Every structure is written in structure tokens, then in C-alpha cells.
Image (cartoon, rainbow, N blue to C red; front, side):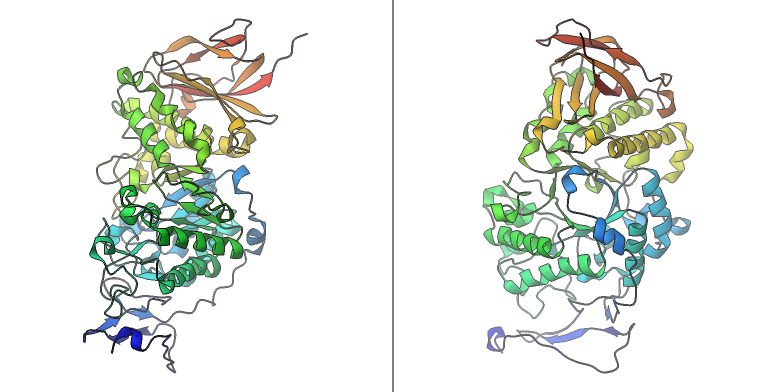
Length: 554
């Protein structure tokens, strides 16, 4: 029979099916072949390599997070957002192998997140998937929590516990492609039901199948899946993977815009915002496509935030340079602020930056072991004090030095070493500083909240900028050279008193300077076109944050 001869929705009712029962669909395909398929809408699955769907009840767990759900609010832009990205299978392992269930992991993970100043947990894809090495990005069950980490009820418990502790939880959603395994969506009825029928766009660079966004059935399937995770599991938002590949054919701007793809994203995001106005929608997008974070009513794609991958690349590549070459590339750290206000950006150091031979974040810092730590502390000063929400992959916070391997837990034993323990203390202090100081998160997408104070000192490799636009103002100074600057002069536009709030060279964070809140003020000495100036002492690869108080003269 031709597929179009008998269209419609097909269903089967079977008496006696109980939770835990395994099942598949046996489909007589167009073309004569018969294959057994997992349920595309199934809520449970066997643990890989088994592939049956499992009858699962979703209403057994009683959420108690009503207060959180009512108060999480929609004012994302003026609040701190500090995300801890986690791969559940390798954060920690029982006895170094296997996996904790989400119920078992809830208490220790929540405690770690709260202690170190994170506001949200973002879990790498929890949808069912056949291969551990895909980290969850080759999905076979778009409505099905993976059996690796327990049951659907365990996931609901995990989210509920996070909410009771004041922590948000984001779901990593994969709306662009799916796994090519033939027990799942691939050629589901013997035809290209979910994927494009053309080979040049049917598969992507990861070997997976591209969703055919021109089909209403496919759009409905993905919209329903996105709704499912926000509704049934109370997730606080979705991070959407590989958005560039929905915007452009095969993710290539040269191949042109996929109009069906962008229409799908607009429809998805507008529908989700209508139903879940307080849910965050975040795009992992490396394109320069306009209006990714503009509302759909203004012809935008409707995301709340977009990963700033340009900032990530420019920043990490700069910190990898030897100090003597940094003066040549001085402008690289200034460049991201020139386009920052084109979109609502989030600053990410994600899982993608610590795998496949890239080395970890701390490893990328130039120089030997001891030299990596002061540069790493200043890197995070930059991240936490520049505008943009924050995201870090697990292990970044304590200076993981081994490239991420999904089969191994993080190297927590490194915290026995003073430099790593002090590095975690520095990261945690910056996280809290970001949270408690409005100058670092309120109105950060208003251009008036950031001002370069020094961005023309390539030989010294010093940068300085002012944050805030209300009553509170902060000054941030970075020394990216390997030299001490004992009296570095900076021009300023007004009289002010500066009180040191934090210094990356303090001994408690692994530096060499005794902790002291030093105070100094501007002098009536014009410098670089400014009517006043002041001098600061800067340690090699050091950074400092100062509270600014206006100084009035009679």
C-alpha cells in the first residue's frame, strides 16, 4: 500500500499492560520489510544495549515545589544566572564505576552547587540514547528519560529536591537531529518519515539524521517533546543544541537559510513562552544570524539567551599565547564587547571545550603548572565581571587538568593539593561576588552598565573597566603580562575612592600577597585625555576588583 493511501493517526489499545512491561511496535513497512520499533512517544526504556520501550507511569510522584514554580519569575535579565553543566554519568561514580541514579546524586550534587555559588544545574541530555560516547546527543527516545540514571520518578525527585534547595534545573534538548539506529525514528515506516529524503541534507556532520522541519508531524513531535520536559518534570528551561543547524542547511551559511527550520524555532519558542513564560530558552548557536534572542513578535527566534562562542574562542586563544605575544593580540580581549549588545549573550566554558584534544580550561593557560593558576584565576575574574550570564562545565571550578572522559568521574582527589583547593575557593568567591553585587548582573544588557577605563595599553597588557550603572560601581583591573606593575597609571573621568574588594594574588587563593583591603583615590593628574588618574600595583597575571565611591571636593 502506498503511504498516502491510508493517512491518519493509528492507535492500539491493549488490556492488562502494567508498569514495567516491555513492548515494541512491529511495523510492516512500505517496501515489504517488517521491523520492530521502540515507541517514539514511550516514557521508559530498557537499559542499553536492550532497546524495548517500558510501560511507565508519570503521575506517581507528587511534586512539592509549588512555591519555587510560582516565584521563579520572568525577569531573567537583571538576575544572576550561574550555570553548572553536568554529565550525570561522570560527575561522580559509585566506587569509581557505574552510575548513580538521579535520586542518589541529588543530595551531594545540590550541596556542591550551593556551596560554590551556582544558581542552576544544566544536565547534558537525559533523553534515551544508545551510545554512552554520544553524551546523550544521539537521541532515540525524545519523551523518555534514559534508564542509565534511574526511573522517570527518580528524575522528578531530583528536580523537586533542587527546587526545594533554591536551585534551578535546565534540560539539554536536541531538536535538530536524531540517532540513525533502525529501532528508533530512522525510516520509521519504511519511508523518510522524520528525516529529509535527500541525502545531501538527510544526514549531518555527526552521522545523525536531520529532522525534516517542513513536515507538520515532525514539528508537532518536537514541540510536544519540549513541552513534555517542562510540564511533566518541572524543568526551568531548555538549552537547545546545534541551533545553527536548524537556521542554515547543514549549519553552513553558504548553503543558505533553512526557512522551515527558522519557522519551526519561532513556532516552538513562541508556543513554549505562551505556556511556560518563566521557563528559560537558551540557544547553543555559533552563527551570526540576526535576532536569535529577539522576541518572535519582532521577527526574532524567541530565545532568552544565546551562547557567546566567539567570546569563548577569543578569550581562551588569548590565554594560550605566550606573554610576549599578547601585546600583538591585545585587541582580541576587547573585541567581544563590540558586538555584545547585538544579542543577549551567555558566556560558556562548556563540555565542548574540554574534550577531543582541546585540553581543559586550566590546562590551556600558557606555561608550566604553577603559572597556569594565576592566569586561571584572572580568566575567571574576566568571566565573572564582564556582562553576560555564566556557564561552566563540571571540573572547571577546581582546575581539572585531565581532559573529560565520559567513562571516568572527575578527579576530585586534586582538591588534596593546595593550589587546586585554593583555585576552587577563588571560583566560589567570584560566584558569590557576582551574586551579591548588583553592578555585576543588573542591567547588564544595557550598554551604559559597562565602560572601558583602560583598553589601550598593549605593551603593559593591562585592561581596566567599570561595571554598574546604579548606585554601586565596580572597577576591574587585569594584568595579562607576566610582569609586576608596581605603579601602573590609569586615567579616570571623575574623582573617586577605590577600595579593594578582591585580589587574585591574595595568599588565601594561592597567590603571594597578604590579604588587605587597600584604599586609594584619584589624583589631580590628567592622563590619556582624562582629567584625573590613579595608580595600582598589579602582580604578574593578576587581577583585582575595587568598589568605587565618588569623592566630592569643595
